[in-house]
Image 1: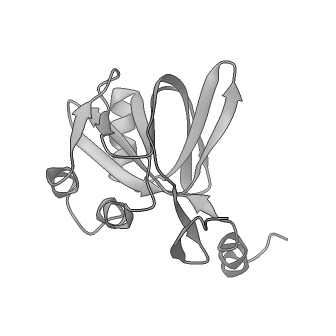
Image 2: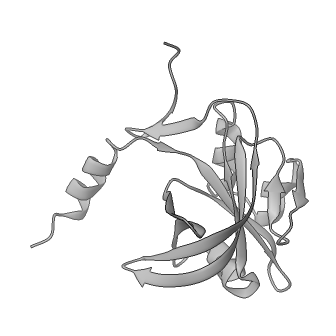
Length: 161
């Protein structure tokens, strides 16, 4: 028998993760983005990553149409940006006050994040309530700073040694 949902959530709160905003742009849905912590590398050759998106999230519809997305990993100073893309505001409001540009794939690149990976979709698998979307990285931009971390239900920052 599988662990209970509550026990599973409690255990995963003890897994520290970087915070990212996944973005896409499509003809039907326009610019879209959402905050995620379920992001991981898959392969170095070819360069691939995966993101997990709830099947009810509208950003997933845009990714399905455009077949591309960007992963924008947030800096330690971008908690407000994370909250803005986490919900409670329209897609238009999420992008209105943020500096961004269309990247190589057309996906929105948030200009001040720690790093951005632009990806084209190579596979999509439904697992429980979430889509696992695997993307091949087409472009990468790295910037200076420290990552925003999410651990035990709260935002955290790396400590200086």
